Every structure is written in structure tokens, then in C-alpha cells.
Amino acid sequence: MKDVAREAGVALGTVSRVINGIPVGESYRLRVEEAIEKLGYRVNSYARGLKTNRTNCVALLMPSLSHPFFATLTDKLTACLMKQGYRSILMITNYDPEAEKKCLVLGHENKVDGVIALTYSPDLQPDDATPMVTIDRHCGDSIPCVSSDNYRGGEIAAEKLAELGCRRLLFMAVASDIPGEVDKRGGGFEAACRRLHIAYEQIILHDRDTETPFYDFLLRHIRDGVPDFDGIFCNTDRLACRMRDFLLGQGIRIPEDIQLIGYDGITDYATGRYTCSTIVQPIAQIAETAVSLLLDTTGLAVPTSICLPVRYAPGGTTRD
Image (cartoon, rainbow, N blue to C red; front, side):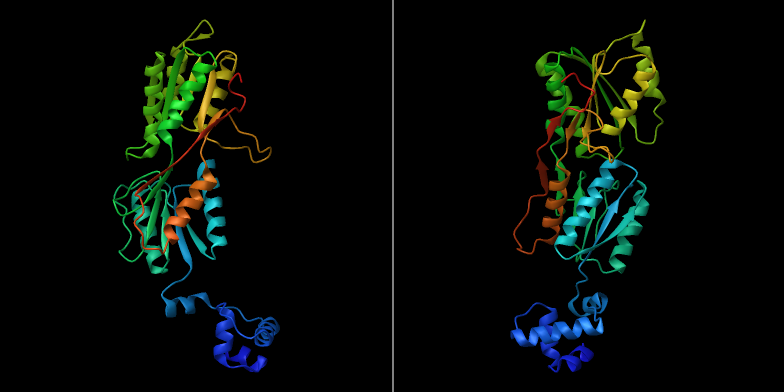
């Protein structure tokens, strides 16, 4: 900054005001900006962080980027933070609660201004000075949690399958040991089936299990090429696509014999089309809400649970 001040022929304080967006005389601003451009000056954000106790950096804790939903959410979060002038440190935890805790410590060591976490640990806690927002899983009364309306999403799936003529439904899910908002998808589906007086079954596996029990279950319910079910709701799009491929391999026509609905609203990277008929999560809105809550400086109390609306979209695995 001293070099810039010398080059521009102004006081050091004038350079500081220009860099920090504080108004100065137009001629002074132009001289400082010209000097910055000529000398290639860049603000040392780490040095500034030591002085201001802020680094304009947020830690993102994600279980994986191999899942399309997590990848898309990370992309939206990073973009939202960038718009607010924040950088992000991305940490991949591979669904490991102990790795999450280590990542949180690493974030504190880097003096991040906050943490946004999609966590698989029920007791993940930042230090008292670091704000945190979670997605899909609650970590305490003082930590806001942002999610889509999973319960209503399950209801919509059952209602849509019924509207499309299905009368024998199946719910398939891969679930975690740790309770979370995602678990409500099955509850909403069941409630709608009961309300509509539609027969249904369910099969739920642990997220560490193989998918073999799913395939065995479906094979037991196909008799002479005719499936027992005419509609299936899967708790993720990825699971819906895998079940679609398996059923097609058994000679079952999709959607003529069985209609399938997933959950997430994942689109194909090449075409931009939905990978299956789906309950669409408002991923961009989830990211915007999480970032807004994290960076909120009003001091006003915020709700600990933010639930955002979902919608249905056809994607080729239903007859609409």
C-alpha cells in the first residue's frame, strides 16, 4: 500500500479508503486505481483477516461430490458466496462423522467466518465464535437447518402416481442411521397412500448396504413377466434411475408397466433434462437461504428450521 501511495502521490489513508470502497475525491480515486493497476497490487486477504478478525472465507462440508445433488448444491453455494464477496474452502468428508469433526477443526484453524455443512454427524458443533448452517439435518437449537419440504414431496409423489392410474405402490429408500429431514419423504408418501386408500409396500436399506436386496425384492414381485407394483417412489433420483435400468433389464417396460418417480430434480449434464420423473428440490433457493442465514448480521432471531417448497416434474419414467 505504501508503494501504491508513493506512485499515486497520495497519503496512505487515501489508498486504504479506495481499497475499502470508502468515498474519496474522484481525482484521488483515479490516481490510486491507476497506481494499483500499474504496480499489480493485490489485497492480502490473510493479512487483512488478522487485523479485522474476518477472512471472508466460508467452509463447505460435503459428504461427496459423486452424488449429483451434492455436486449441484456445492456449485450453487459457491456461486452465492462469491456474489457476497466470500471465498469457500470445500471439504469432502466421505460420510464419515469423525472426518467431519476434523474438517471443522481445520476450518477453525483457517479462521473461516462460517460453516455450511451437509453433515452425517448428529453432534457436530462449531466453536462459539463461528456461525454454522446445516442442510437436511439438525445439529442443535442454535444452528439453523435448511431443507426442502420432504414430507410434502412424498405426498406429491403418491398423489401423482395415483393421478396417473397407479393402484399398487412401492416406496424404496436408502436411509442413514442419523435422523434427518430426508426421512420425511417416506412419511409423506405413506400418509398420502392411506388418505387415498391405495395399497403400498416399502423396502428401506441402510446407506452402507449393497443394493442386492432391492433387486431380490423386485424379482420376487415379478410373476410371469407381470410386476406386482405399477408405481414406485424412490427417495432419490439416483436410486430411481438404477431401479429403472434393472427393471428394463428384466423386460419390464417403463413407464408402460411400472411408473417411477424419484426425488431431487437432478438433470443430465449433457442435455439439461431431468434424469427421471422427479420431485424437484429448489437447490438454488436452498443455497441462497443457507448463505443468507450464515452471513446475517441483523442480530435478529432466525428460525432453526427453514422448509422450502418442492414441485413435481415429468422426466420420462411416468406416463404424463
